Image (cartoon, rainbow, N blue to C red; front, side, top):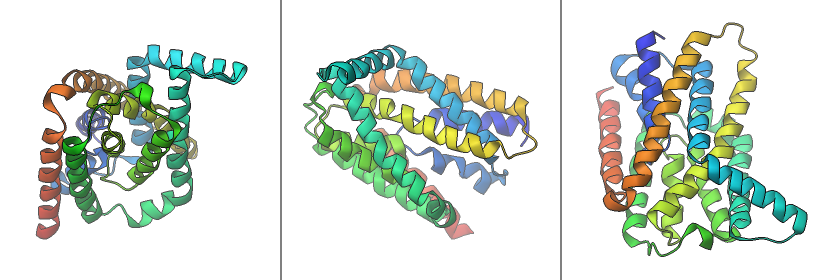
Length: 266
């Protein structure tokens, strides 16, 4: 890839990773419209590291508090709201982790087509709109129990299918359970930390087998994705209550329509 392509794809990844609009749907557009090459394993690892750094830095105080509360609950066998939230993150991570181990090859070989991404972008976008409109939005993160965490975790496992959007489907599940928008978004972002770390580690192990690694491009992609992802999280949490999810729903419908049009032109 050229430097320009690295920069643009890193920007796309950083912006779309935490918004409910599907990063995978966006990353196929340059290849479809401009004939750009596949970004490759090294790039995937770089942007995973970047987005993980962004969410860890933004939620650094929460992560520290939750980690200490979790350790305290293990030692004392007594829980509070923060330790329950920490356990909820762990419970919510298990389904996606298992799904990744069991079905990653199936998805890679059979579910990465433009048609699949277009249909999931549209279908799960509609579900997001329904959950946002009909959800009661009266629950906060302190109301999250293990059943809710498991439900959101099972929904996160669906994000293995490209176009679903990990953040989009977890926010959809949380909104459907009655959580307010900020709570849904915050739990989605906290839930992303272990799953992005696991995914990055898995891809990093694969990268060890690659003989030539473009370290310069990796460094640029990591930095750009980290900065843009951090800004995206910050802006999104500040405006989500005012704007709601419908702008993202309409955007997903339009994006899915563009992808279907590209298929029709092919």
